[in-house]
Length: 115
Image 1: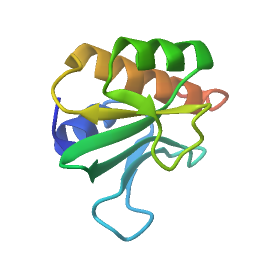
Image 2 (image 1 turned 180 degrees about the horizontal axis):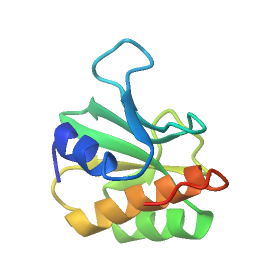
Image 3 (image 1 turned 60 degrees about the vertical axis):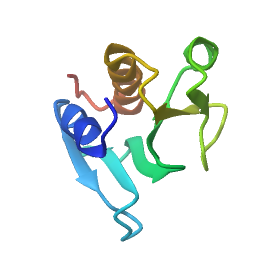
């Protein structure tokens, strides 16, 4: 997974999700939950790669940061709760999908929405 469209397409497989451009800037895509408007994935281009910011529990946040050099404290986000995934081809697709799914689950808690 290296392209914005692939990330958006995967995010749209979750229940109750929509794509948004809150800054009126096509570089910044966010994937939101319809019920509570929470963002579970920020998608943008930076340093010639697509980056995805995702929410993570602290123990998983650190696990992913230690597992891959392309998972770092989130760009322009709370570094305690968010990671940036740099889609440079070094992270297996299944792990990217898992991190996005975990972010969706965290942001949808209490909404009654599931995948």
